[in-house]
Length: 289
Image (cartoon, rainbow, N blue to C red; front, side, top):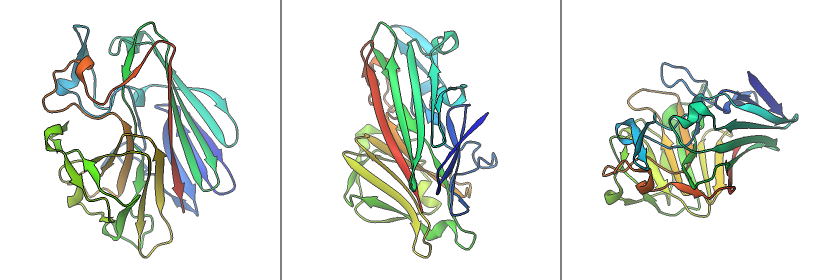
């Protein structure tokens, strides 16, 4: 089932499967990628309780091994609509016998979408409903149409960054993070979008404080901006070498296994920890013009 919210400027659609944003329209323009499986059959999946790949698609916790596909299981689970108005919807996913077979923690994941002016707020809340410390990662994966207008091409667009400063870049070795080869990424200037930009998979940067990332073209008034405060990582991705007409801007609270991973969840870098009864809250916004 699809839930719809809107205001005078913006219309959004969210699927109960995965609590996934499937449409964001304004100016008679569809800003979200429409999940053509020829290129990538998703729109904006929620990544939980892992971000990225695990070595051998599994991990161990307290001596027991668990299978886990890339980006976790939340994107394929049915969420429940807990609250809905014309401009806001809250969807929830609770741990159950099925999830505990592959992730041994009790949790409640809430995802909120709310339209305001020219933007959409996406809020997350993770609650540890169990009796032991909980380890998790979390991420957004929204894919935006590029180009936004038929008269333009993929290569007409670029990323702009605010603040314009260098950020630590985490390179990938295959699907895994190579933490020993961190470099300084030149995000102190615009980066032209091209196919070759993604030939080594996603561009991943460490981020601190307030960050704003915009996809735009010099010859167009239309753009899309993703902004947040205090999210540790961001990924930029389009599936190389496919000539896919979209680009993702992905706020992450975690990342893929490093190349020297032990496979133990207790050792995995980038994970978040919650004591029993604690809550983790965070958010990002998408603004379109």
